[in-house]
Image 1 (tube, rainbow, N blue to C red):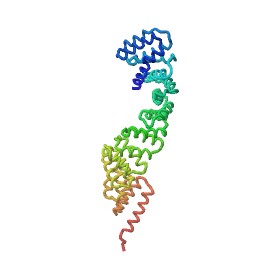
Image 2: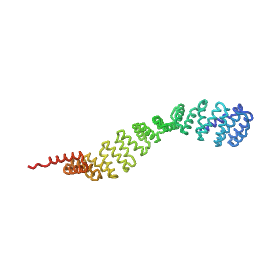
Image 3: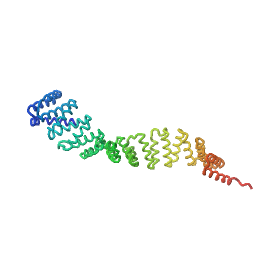
Image 4: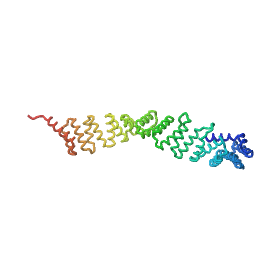
Length: 390
């Protein structure tokens, strides 16, 4: 689009007045004929007519080369267009805005042709003195684009900043270029405000929210990352399942395990993924929501019998001693721990003989202060509870 606009401005400089004022009469007549052919969409004939001009005057050659560059571009012959525009620019014969617009078209063609490094010297030259009728901001945006394409990250950022000085509001493309450079340079803190601006421009784009949360975590601002993801969800952004898991982790890290558990409970595989089930159980337990935690541990035990131990522990803690004994019978391994848990359960059910049996069993497996303490206490308690014989 910009090249097409520039083309019109170049063609406007080919008016009869400008041609007559600078060119020799021989060249002026032929240039006007070629220009007329081009306007009648006879491009190939116009190119042939211009190539046939035989002149020794330096300015005439430069002017013809510039027109050939324009016509070749119109005809889709980009390489030939670049060659002719280079000749026009390098001749130094064109002056003022005529020279500036010609070099601008050359730079834009080089950029579009992915000759990024070759375009840069031209853009920097153009930026030194911009005619009042042209826009300096466009030059700096092209400079930023070219540096970005050749991975010259440190030069992208100042070019974008110079472009943005001319703008009254934030724009997507320059901010995206700046963000890319900041990420490549690992300037995490600098990238955060850039991402915040991009979110304002494209609040529906989930990758901006995700990147912002990631950067906030990178700079140890987990609270900020939590706020970012929570706000994204609140605004209806379609977070991925992985994003939601991260949100739950952040809630837990910030001491809000109940919210973490609720977040996980809303995921697609909340009742079928064993890791999700266990995480929910752990979060509910940390939140001291014992009933919710027990439900989740029981569900986990259906998928993996090792979680019977967690179920039993919570049942004992909650005073469900009889149910706990049944679950403890299903626990594999942990013989000493199971025996001690049964000791406590039987004691609470006032079944002292069974409690003492379990305490001795635990002590036989691995002698410990805890098992010995139970044995001593229960033995004394049994003596006190027996009726005295007179």
